[in-house]
Image (cartoon, rainbow, N blue to C red; front, side, top):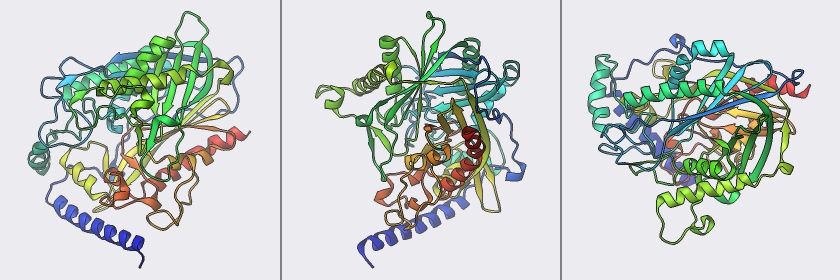
Length: 511
C-alpha cells in the first residue's frame, strides 16, 4: 500500500469514527418535529415563466432598481449575534463599521412577466425565510405580473446573523433540546426576531419599489479580467475569474444606469471571528461605482466554494500599516475600477428575451455534524424526514436565459466552480479514485453560451462538492469544506435536477 493510499485509509477511518460519535451524541438530543417528506407543505414557490426563443415584436427591456438599509439602530444592544464562525459565549456585535443593505432589480422583456433579483448583505438566508418574504408579496406579485422572486445572500461573515448558526451555544445545547422534548416551538438560534421581521418588511418594500421604478432601456453584457483578485484554496482550481457585468442603460438620459455584476470571491476582509458589523468589500465597491460611474450596483456572488479575496498589499496599493477597513475599501475600489474600464466597444447588446424556470428539490442530508447542529436549532433550513433515520433539505433551483447567449444558474449554496465550468477532478486525482461523469452547467447551457452563476440563491445549504472528491472532514485536503457540506451525493442530486430543468430551455435556444 503506497503512502497516498495509507493517507486516505487513515482519514476515512477517522471519518467513520467521528460519524459514530456524532450519531451517538445526536441520539441523546431530542429532535425538532421535522415533517415527513410526503407531508412537506410547499408555499411561496414560483415556477417562473415559459421558455422563449425570440424577442416579441416591439419588445424592450424594462428594469427598476431600489435599495434600502437593513439596519434598525439596535444592533449594539447585546442581542444581535454576528455571523461567520460558531464561537463560544455570546458573539454579539460590538461596533458598526458600515451598512447592511438590500438591493433589488425588477426585470422584464416584453411578455412573460417580471423577474426580481435581490442581493442582500447577509451571511445566508434559508429557503424558509425566502418564502416568508415572498408571502408578504403574494397579492402584489399577482397585480404586477411577477413570476419569479430571487434573493441572493452576499455571504459576509461579518454581518448580523440571519442564518441562526451563531447563537449562544449554552442555549442550543442545554435549553433547546428540552424544548424539543416537549415539542415547544420557541427554539432560539442566532436570529434576532425583531431584526428578522424588519428584514422581511424592508426587503418586501424594496422589491415593490424596484417594480414601481421600472423603465425601458437597453441591456449590454461585458466582462473584465479580475483573476489577480481571487485566491482558490482547493483543487481543481477552475474558476470564472471575470467580473461579469450586465449594464442596463435607461432610455431616459436623466436616469441612472444599473449594473448587475457577478464575482467569485468570499467576503473575508474583516475575518470571520470578529464582532464588528461590516458588509465588507461589496459596500465599498458599491460606493466607488456610485461615486466614479454614477451607476446602481447589484453584486451577486458566483461559484465561490473555496475562493478568497486576494488581500495582497502591493496588489491593492496599501501601505505596510493598514486596517481591515482599508483592505475592504481598497479591494472594492479595485473591482469598481475594473468594471468602469469595460468600454462600449467590448460589450454586446442583449436582445430583450427573458425566461426563467424554477424547480423544488430535496437534497440528501447525511453529514452527522450538520444533522447534530440542526437538532440544536442553530441551523434553521427546512429539514424533512425521508425514512426512519434519513433526512433531506427542502430547497429549490433556477435556470434563466437572457437574450440568446446568456444562461444563468441559480444555486442554493456555495458551488465548487468546476461543477459549473467543467474540469472536475478525474479518477487519478479525486479522493474516491473515481471520475465525475455528469455534465457541467456550462455543458447544459449549450454551445456559444455565456454561463453566469448566481450563488446562495434562495437558500444557503453550505458547500456543494463533487461526489467523487468528497473528503473526510479531518483530512487536510478538505480546507474545511466538507464540515458544512450536507451530503456526499448533494452535487449529483443537484446537477441531475439542473439537467432536467435546463433541457427544455436548451431545446428552445437551439431553435
